[in-house]
Image (cartoon, rainbow, N blue to C red; front, side, top):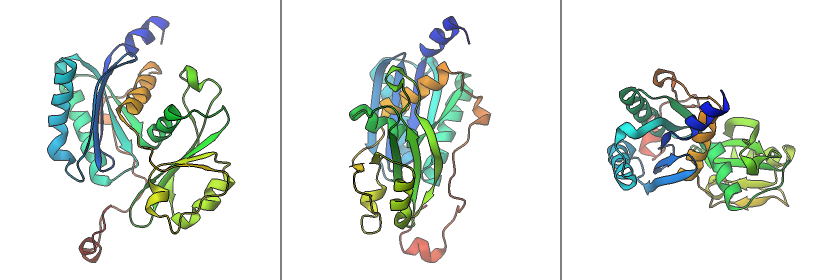
Length: 252
């Protein structure tokens, strides 16, 4: 992609939608300017609320749907139902508007968020670990590159995978992690042990700006796709609960 094409691509209006967890996030960005962003706690009501929130964010930004040039979505890992909602909405809008899609990692967005709040030196590693329910976590490890402050992407050194809370201590130590972020440790505090010296950021949650930053980077790098190629990132193979597990309140 030429410099002129890159500049044109990064000036597109990007809409991002994330429904991977119990929050619903919708945001709009053009270039480096955040036009509007909303996050609501909706539990499992994403499908009922997402299109309404998209309309509200567009109205706040003073834009019509036809202004959207790219649609990004939180591809996961996260809840099966939530991931399907975000992917389906992204595909539907992109097809209707004849624009491309970008699939965004929820764990990378989480790592970006904690870095935006408190930077780390190049070479340092972040473990992004979110609750995956059923006594498991979604986990990935990222390393800060030399030019991260100038826009270079985090380096994924451990791809998204399931992690048992009791395995966390060894996982963090063996991979030289400097900071832990996400909901995993707080949810499984009794079993989730953190080696001494690792900074813990339990409260960190990815926001619209984090997803927009990743989406803009993907667009500039030419990492867009046709709507029909978009798909959620399913880390867990299991897609259904038994009746007893449902009765006990378990959720995937």
